[in-house]
Amino acid sequence: MALDVRLATDTLSAPAELENFLADRTGDGAVVAFTGLARGVGKDGSTVESLTLDWYPGMTERSMLDIAEAAAARFPVSDLVVVHRCGDITPGETIVFVAAAAPHRRVAFEAADYLMDRLKSEAAFWKRETGPAGTRWIEPVAEDRAALARWKDKTP
Image 1 (cartoon, rainbow, N blue to C red):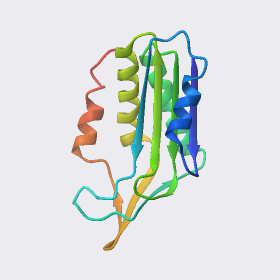
Image 2 (cartoon, rainbow, N blue to C red):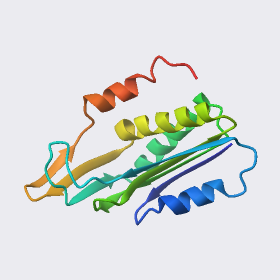
Image 3 (cartoon, rainbow, N blue to C red):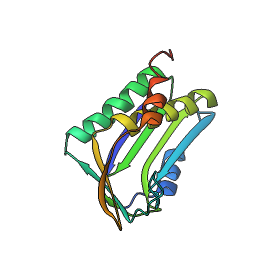
């Protein structure tokens, strides 16, 4: 089982990440990949010109690795990759790429879903949006907390 967890300070290419993840893969029946993009519109409908993901070196990577290790322990996957951007990101750019490989599709879907729910709410990033009205901090909302809570009672 391989875990590939990385923080990207520059452009993140989801197609290249997926191509690398799929290379020489013959033992799995399923690969599920998720790509998260920066939106140009905030939750309140306002224009977003940029998203900044601040991080603390070492701490942020450790939080990402902890989440990936928990997914690997919870789901019988073959491999996982988590690549998350940090720094300044413009609308349309890739923020996060996650992929899970497993013998069967359900496990791969659940592992990728679990990773994203935890990354969204628990990874050590400090997020802020900048638009015409200024800058504002972004925190997890009730929907994010509900998505995370559904994993508390589930067994693998």
